[in-house]
Image (cartoon, rainbow, N blue to C red):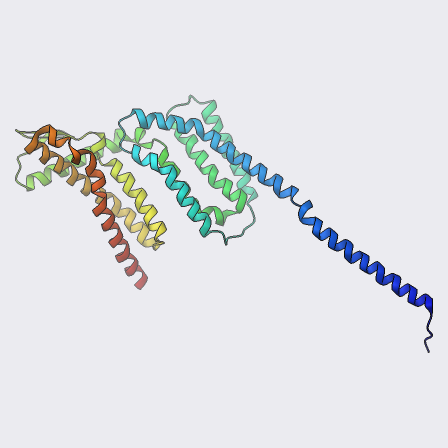
Length: 322
């Protein structure tokens, strides 16, 4: 039989008081833990921010060099280069909102690759004679560093969701300046060939004066760099990427439309050049150098966009049924 004892009661009360104090201390520690753990993430955020700023600062001389080439050279893709950065920023904002649900641990391997990429790009700028293809390679490495920075900060899945907007930054680099000796002159020649075929089909007596000049008894037209169609080709490729990405088209639809970009752009540019020739043929240089010469590239994008829209719908419907 158990007997009541004041000492037992005192001991139990002391134990309960001790337990209550331990609970209070645990609550205090749990309240303080978010505050005390902020130092780690805050420092980590500062490090990542400084790395991001370092990438952007490293890109500055490349952007300056690219701008000088676009501004002082007769390159057709200059307009595309100007809008590439704002498009990348807008699409990047949209992509980041769509990927808010993605939670993944950061990639430490991406951090190592990021450091190597930045070091290689810096060496190319500082030690190699800063001109030409070396700067193109350095710019490509810095743009790739942005992707690695996202992997390092938020993981591969988050970085992959923003990869397409980041790829638009590649259009800022003056690839055309180094490709025009092959690609651009070839496009000039092909445009002249197609325009002559179209004019001959309409009954005009025209011929080649050289590979990129349409000649006749009454008028001749030189197809220069800006009329080669490379600006329309690059712009249409970029806008098709943007449209299919925003429309969330099937991958098969995207690839099909990207393959169709080249023939569509060549056909549109052939029509444009043929119309310029006809304006010059009937109205002289004043008509040929008028609104159609400078504004037709923008006007033609209206039916081209309509064609891309309906092709996208038709292809999506077809691939969905399969």
